[in-house]
Image 1: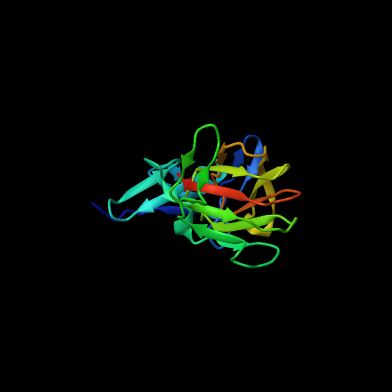
Image 2: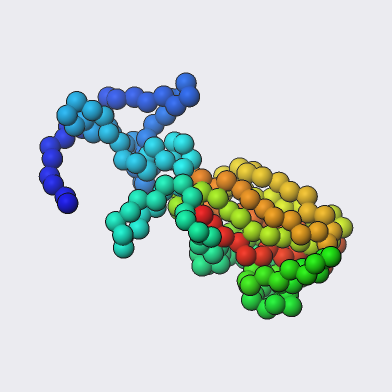
Length: 209
């Protein structure tokens, strides 16, 4: 049920977050004023979510606001249409795939994944995956492995055209590694990976919750 109410707008209200000044902002970057209703102060939920780096999204089908992690596995990163970039800019070297041969990890026990990104670039430069999250997700999870002797993987927050390192991983040769990173409050994300002799590097079943 929706009903109309009368509120006041108070632009003089200030905020502090953990002892530091905090300015709630609108989507366009302008200062967000405080609403006063029945003697209480209100700001949009998204402003508070941004302050505490908590994901927030709207499910119109069920009229539900989603805070933090989603139920179940979440959303496939591939559904968000990531942009892939390799030194050679050649899809022969970097592909989104569901090919079981490419997505099978050959260890003491074989593990077969359903979808992922397969990089077989001969470049020593890092391979990059760019994706827009729009601050809707809390956690990124995926599996990875490489045939490189010195595999590296770095997750970056590239919101506002800046680059903030969220987490860095060493990926040992021929070892399956599970990756989990907090991406709450991240608008734009970069996954960067590579090594000295990168012959194969796989990002398998990347999900966002």
